[in-house]
Image 1 (cartoon, rainbow, N blue to C red):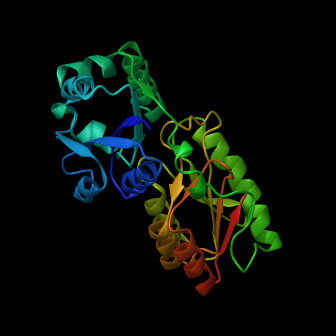
Image 2 (cartoon, rainbow, N blue to C red):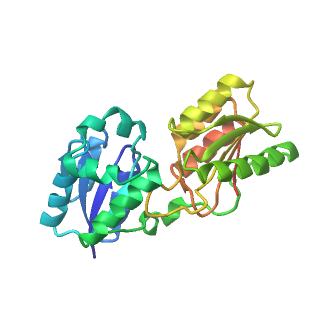
Amino acid sequence: MARIGLVAGEGRLPIVFSAAAKDKGDTVIAFGLKGITDPALEQHVHKIHWLEWGKWQKGLLLLASERINKIIMLGKLKKETFFKQAEGLDGESKKMLKKLGDKKDYAILNEAAKYLKKLGVDIIDSTLYLADFIPRKGTLTKRGPGENEWEDIKYGQMVAKSLSGFDAGQTVAVKDKTVIALEAMEGTDETISRAGALVRGGFVVVKVARPDQDMRFDVPLVGRETLSTLVKAEGSVLALEADKTLLMDRAEVIKLADENDISIVII
C-alpha cells in the first residue's frame, strides 16, 4: 500500500485513476486547482487540497506536510493558461519558468520534475494504474480502414510524429494525403472540429505520442467527447498509437463509432 499525491488537472482522468488506486489499496491525497479540477474528485480521494492557479510554493509545503514522496500528474491543463494567467504565478513559479527558454509542455514538466526530485519527491508513471485503458495494435470497430484511408493514416502518422517532436501537438487530420488541420494549443477536439469545417467529411484523424514520450505526464488521451466531435465533423477514421495512448469509455466509443460507420484503429 502506498501514499500517493495526485496533482489533478481538468477532466475525468484523475477520478478514474483515484478509483484504480483505491482498488489497489493505495491512499490518494489530491491537489486540485480551483476552477480547473472537477470538484467531484473530492468524493474519490482520501483528502484533497484546493489550490489557486500558480501557487507552487504552497503546494510544495502541503506535499511536505502530508509526507508524500511520490506524485502522479493527471488531467488536462490548457497551455494557454500559462499565457493568460501569468500574473497568477507565485515567486517560485516565476523563478522556475524564467530558467526555461520557452513554455513548451515538456520543458515545464521536466523542470518541475527536477525541482521535486531535489526535494525527495518523484513523479511516477500513471499508466502503472491505467494499463487497462491502453489499447494494443488492431482494429477496434466493425469496419476497418479502406485502402485510401490506410494511405492517409500512414501519411498522417508521419506528419504527426514530426510535428510532435517540436512539442506543437500530436494530432493531424488528413484527406487524400493532404493535411487538413494540425493541432497546436487548442487540443484534439478543436482540431477535429476545424477539419470538419474545412472539408466535406471523409477525413482521417491520427493521434500519436511524442517520439520521446515520457509516460509520467501528458499521455495522449481520447474518449467519448473526441469521438462525438469526430461524428459531428463527419470524419471517417480515428487512428491512435498503440501502447502510448489512453482510451477512455472504450465500450461507448466503439459503439458510437460503429453506429456512424467510423473506423477506430490502433497503429
